[in-house]
Length: 144
Image 1 (cartoon, rainbow, N blue to C red):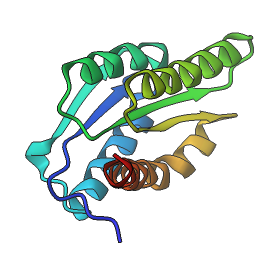
Image 2: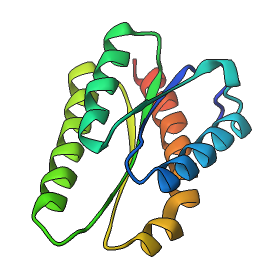
Image 3: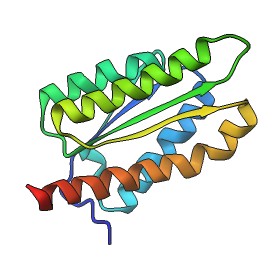
Image 4: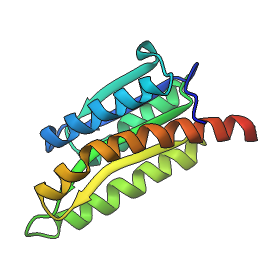
């Protein structure tokens, strides 16, 4: 069973496609609280877009005091190569921060073909990110 009591969790939310990322954040924070994470132990910051998420995650990791972090964003395919660039770079950067700091990061930066697909995933993926963060924080505490 997932138990978030006593965990401090940081959330970094990209504002681009803000209607989707706001829903992701709301679902994520709600699920964290339902898992026992105190609202006062959730730090939520926003950044302009998906490419800026990793920089804020890195700053939170460097500051310390978190058992897990969560990346929230939404990248919707357009007509140019920009989608692939942002999707690939943001994903790789989030993973690099997690590995460099040995800190679990639940990556819920959605990559979808269209707005409808993003809307269909926003609540479920927000909740999933919260569950992953708590589960991985528990696992790393056991492995330490």
